[in-house]
Image 1: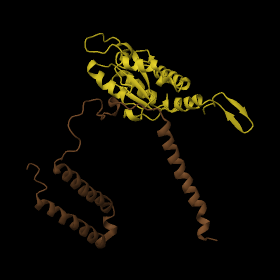
Image 2: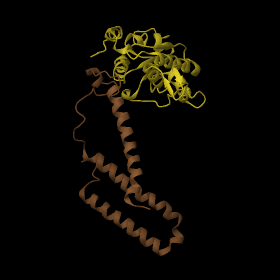
Image 3: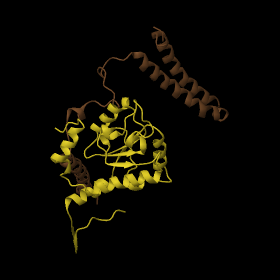
Image 4: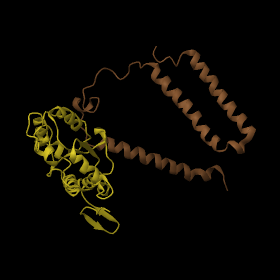
Amino acid sequence: MVDAPEGIEGQGFFATSLDKVIGMARANSLWPLPFATSCCGIEFMATMGSNYDLARFGSERLSFSPRQADLLMVMGTIAKKMGPVLKQVYDQMAEPKWVIAVGACASSGGIFDTYSVLQGIDRIIPVDVYVPGCPPRPEQIIEGVMKIQDLARKESLRRRNSDEYKKMLESYNIETQ
Amino acid sequence: MSSPSSYLPIVIQTGVAIGFVALALGLSHLLGPKRKTTQKEETFECGIETQGNARFPVSIKYFLTAILFVLFDVEVIFFYPYAVNFKEMGVEGFVAVVSFVALFLAGFIYVWKKGAFEWEK
């Protein structure tokens, strides 16, 4: 059960700001798109399983179509050839969207310091939360998801219309209009 | 007791149910944040560039193979319960199954004569 956001309470009424209500709803209904390319993906399978159970956080509905996903979870080594694929998946996700880079490879290329591997997915898409580890344990992945929930809960409704945010998207060659 | 007017609550409930769904879907569509760009509206083919059009003629053989498989698969499925109850159902059951199979056999001969089994052509 999720606690109500802080607000003014009285007999028969409750008042709070729209930001907080929407933030609460978004944070507790994130639909992840698992982009699992290697061993971190195996850890993610454990995270979705009954022992760790990501469903507790309202994220049991995995989406394999970007159109219905809010949370892109990139787990594993992203080869440079995979880059445009990942970029299109990010581009086509529903608004607003968040990204977790799970594991050393997705965050920085990890041990694969070679010509063929992307040195961190933040070279092509903006990343909100990095989960370190090689591979990280399911507890760490859950921690990452909880950090995303925190971001979603506290995000201002105007953030994604701000010039700062649009500039950031443009720096990744993502169309804003 | 059951005059037409006593069904009014059901009509109202149906109206409220449909209205709520329409309102919730419509409002979220209108108020939800969205960003319509050409990058985003592109056809999604798992990140791979699209090739050609999705609406092009596919060889009829695929359809024939699939539909014939379904037909005869269903026929075979019916044999399982019949095999279990073979003795109890006696002559009557036998006649029923033979008429069922005969129907399929007629269809089988028909598609055979039509050349549906000439895969290579």
